[in-house]
Image (tube, rainbow, N blue to C red; front, side):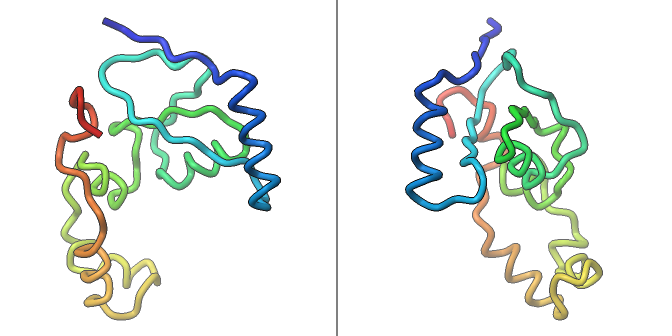
Length: 129
């Protein structure tokens, strides 16, 4: 059965404005919802080939976006969400050296070893996440 998730109402937008003012945020707060099964997101833009952080930045700027496992381009985020295993180039830390993020591959290895991760397949199973 296909579920439709509607646009957020006035109350949630007002609460977001209040939170922004109270906490001194420079941008709107963004909400993240993990959904299961087949859904239609009313008024949402389906993203493809985007990183999770890009989707969050779009949401903070007021865009309503939807990013699924197939559209997620970031291998680290895909691993954190249990969608795909971490590529060897990142697991060894060499990829982060190549990107200029760290200078020592061991630091990259340690970062990914300590990164919180959901179990493979946990998002998308009813009753989980």
